[in-house]
Image (cartoon, rainbow, N blue to C red; front, side, top):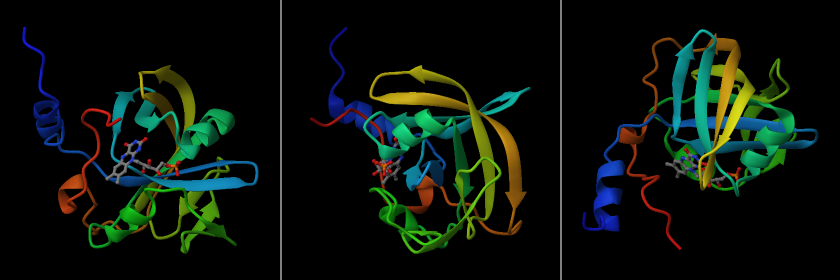
Length: 166
Ligand SMILES: Cc1cc2nc3c(=O)[nH]c(=O)nc-3n(C[C@H](O)[C@H](O)[C@H](O)COP(=O)(O)O)c2cc1C
């Protein structure tokens, strides 16, 4: 079979409808929030959420060292937030990039403005190449606004995935 052109792989993988959220992570004094599109539920018993995190990301180190993370679903009206959180976040007081946070039950940051959130404890992690797939069991959850439209990749012009650029 002829080799697949990179452009074609990119074009098709970018068409996969994905969520868009902020992953919260923390180890000791180090806190972070990161824009994340590769997130989905993968088991009902236990209730497991999978996220795939770039092995070079600060978030990767914080999750590996703490064994916990949060998933913060966001209002589709406010997708600019995802641009800010696509590089390491700045913590000032109890804010990350000026967004208020609190310490969740797991110790990981929960965004006060999140429309809904989950807190997860890592049960398994799999090295899948550029990324590590973290499988987290849901141990806490909250809905702040039941009416809000939840942000997804379709609400933005941003792209993530495809073939790694060198
Ligand atoms: C729209 C969008 C979606 C993203 N999705 C992911 C993702 O699913 N996994 C990932 O590891 N990085 C993803 N990123 C990249 C991270 O947000 C970015 O590399 C971040 O700076 C790394 O986080 P760090 O602060 O933990 O180093 C995405 C970026 C954007 C703009």
